Length: 423
Image 1 (cartoon, rainbow, N blue to C red):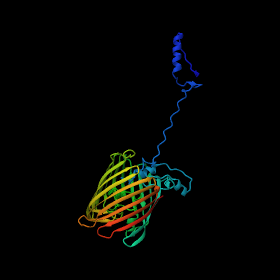
Image 2: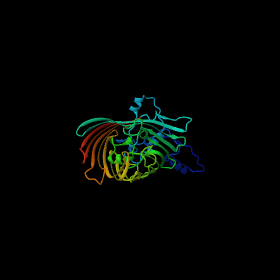
Image 3: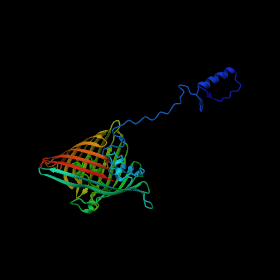
Image 4: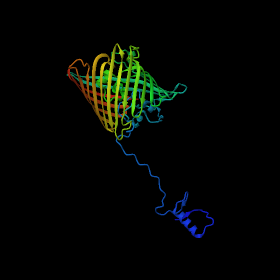
């Protein structure tokens, strides 16, 4: 091995010079040039980063699959803030090649193509979307019947103003549901959002009431075609309100005050307060210990009667396992099915297992007592379902079997096959 090294050593005797030369030979010098390396002198090559181990879920850190305070979702605007990806693929090709796997928040098939940055307007970015949920409902009780249900047909836009802390969402249901005033049913969401406070959203407008977790969750992330009995009786409603929503690693909350009316045309029949708090002992991550969420909330107000609903919630998710339990008790309530002065209660327990990112087997036991002062009127529903997430929540097929065990009317069976498309 030959090493080219320049050194200048003044006033040294030959012995001292030999010692220093030997030390220089044994010690690698900065920027030295090795012309003929010997074995063991090869330069160290940087270690290549260890390949990420293959998990069943490539998006384990992102896909919580636990319903929290996500209807006024931080996530939908996080996805919205990502840069557009320009693709020259065909419309069908974009769907086929898309890698949508998240199921905890709504995502859209044509997110990039339908996102615009209009010039000379107050908006920085706009995303126009459409949504469709429909299903075939087969019922025998004991007579057999098959009905087609247009569960949801919706068009909407959400966006960001030039001032980045101001965002908005507007959603309309152009096809009215039977038995409702068109002016009441056409509006889905209409609200403004301010995110100037870190980890918070301030929301003003017409939006979902967080009465329970499933009762306040987006339609597009429901684990079954229909909500649980407590969710569809006590919750699944909207109102004009002011909200403060906070989201931290170990806790999140949703507090609102507003109108007890349930439609844009309801006016102000009375005031309403709603509050919900979640505690997450393991934080937001769930690779090692899973994700545990413990929550409780209260909904109370006046709409012809005084009403109050108290709810509690526990959920646990770890890799392929998904489970939750929710219970509620009401002294009068004001949900999507109208105002009731009944003292009611119920619970729903759900257990799910994802075989892979696209297929999930899920079951639920659901009980509702519409009037605690009356005996023999319990209603129980046992549901088994299969979710096929073709492209996350953006394109999925659902199959549910429901056995309805009723104390005061004949039992029944349902087979529901539904499709959801978000574009």
